[in-house]
Amino acid sequence: MSENASDLNGLKKRMDGAIQSLKHDLAGLRTGRASASVLDSVMVDAYGQSMPINQLGTVNVPEPRMIAVQVWDKGTVGAVEKAIRDSNLGLNPIVDGTNLRIPLPELNEERRKELVKVAHHYAENARVAIRHVRRDGMDHLKKAEKDGDIGQDEARSLSDQVQKLTDDYIGTVDSTLSHKEEEIMQV
Image (cartoon, rainbow, N blue to C red; front, top):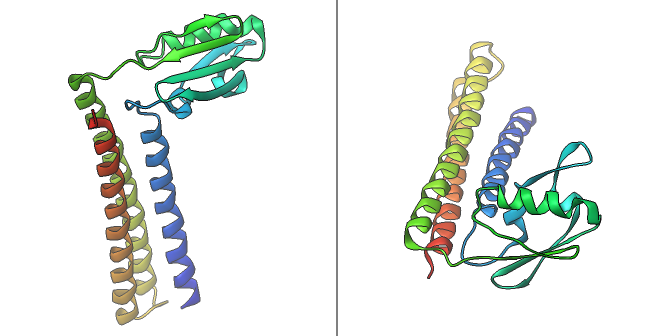
């Protein structure tokens, strides 16, 4: 039984990974409020390679609608500015020496709806990942039952536990999406 409990823990860890991935993806969606994580996906061509902004400077949020980047090397300021402008985030940094101030424009209704669609896409990817984990777990149980490692009753009990785990994680995805959707649509 302890082997099967560890199998359930393994499934739970993989489902946790799907939730963490969803939260990371949603954090990158720009809402009306500034968040340093908005720039996480921006890669800068510097020193002959592609690097995330947080390896080239300090990112912080001095005001609710402003992101500031303190670039450490004056030679990379232009590359950081270009990467932010070209990132399709709709941001226009203002350069002041080695500091970049990035005001967040007010989101219009159309852009908010587009962001909600993207959030739904991220949530669906997380649901699919969780269902894949469930399928793997169910396949493992069927094989264990077929090989005689577990009995039919135990297999049924464990498959019920896997399904309950799946339902709980899908619920977490739905509530996370709902919260993000509210945050995006707030005016």
